[in-house]
Image (tube, rainbow, N blue to C red; front, top):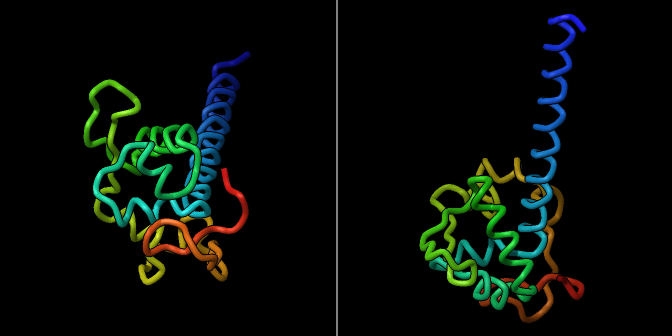
Length: 138
């Protein structure tokens, strides 16, 4: 294989890998929108996975996995990392809410799940000040 062919091969492999990572990050943003996780974080001080799970009505394991992924991707910040996953706290940094949960922001439309007539049901219950999502959830 020639050097030009190797360079093209490597560039394509890198492009596809980067696209896969972007698709997974987009999926996690979509889940955060659909499950109301960003809305809970926007109304909260730093939270643990258990606190987010309780407020959003999801299983604590899913909350922990989602929070960890969001921190690794740079969407959320880790505030207190004592080394134990159960006591680690996360916070939404300034400006993030405008992209993921503020319909009045010009940046809101770029995140997945922000198009169309809303993404959450208006059922009673749910986190304080937030409508409850439809379905049984996670």
